[in-house]
Length: 388
Image (tube, rainbow, N blue to C red; front, top):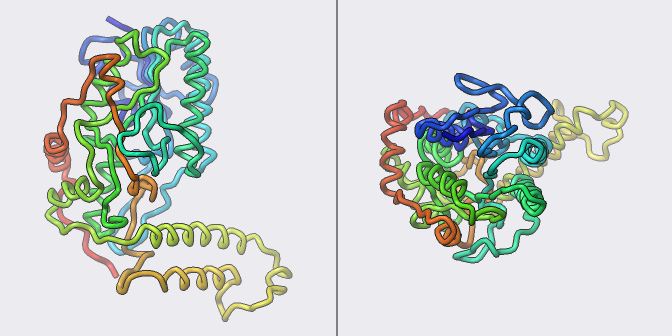
């Protein structure tokens, strides 16, 4: 029986790994900032008693994350209304994904951990990675705070491995299945509310991987001495387009395929939304004399910041297709434009060569089990009424 520590154990990936390891008889110490039944409350971004739990552990699975679109970041979703702000600040993303990783690596090295598996994501390759990209594909700055922070965390793990820590990085594809927020619950709820949208016809490439395959990959990588010091891709048996993937959820719900919008238009709208938040904050902080000095006074009851935003939104609106209300009717939830417009898929041949692992859950089978879970929890029930 192995002694295993799992961080982020109240989340989708960490929870599934902890459950599987307990099922095979391991002694599992589950850590998460949220705490809960069978999970110790621990913030790995801060020094604390959690560090002692790593001492002498046979395996540490580091799955703690923030800003990845987990269920805990899910705001209310209503038809005809913008999704509430679920975005985690870049500072918090860096604190958890990078600061937390550094703290776990330090505690693991001091505690003499036998093996460490660090969970990352193929998004570090950016949207323009070539089709069939393997682990030798270059990783550079993408401009996405989440992807760039994950890449920096990978570098920290690789540096620790170079100095003797037996660590492995697993870059997961688009993990879906029971309890998945980002690639399961979010799309389902947005489709129910008639809010999900395909960009450029949904031709972007995905690397779907069912949670059962993720768990078996973690166990295989942790069990093989040949994976130490490696960064390995973990994807499902076959790639998919966004339209094909989301089409499974539309079928489950009995709703039409979502409409399509040009990616450049959605990107401009996203920029407008960000500018709205900045200008609103700036307007709230402006002194009365500064507002009075504005060169173009706003109409009655409209602040200067509001007038600027209105002009910006009108400019974006002129580019939208007829009848589309961008502020009230479309959304990608936690997914970025880069997530759904990738040019190519990733290769997971390397992990098979080193550990013998290979994915066992085809997309159709994975979606069938996911549908059963969604239906059991009432998430495929009555659609939200459209509010105008």
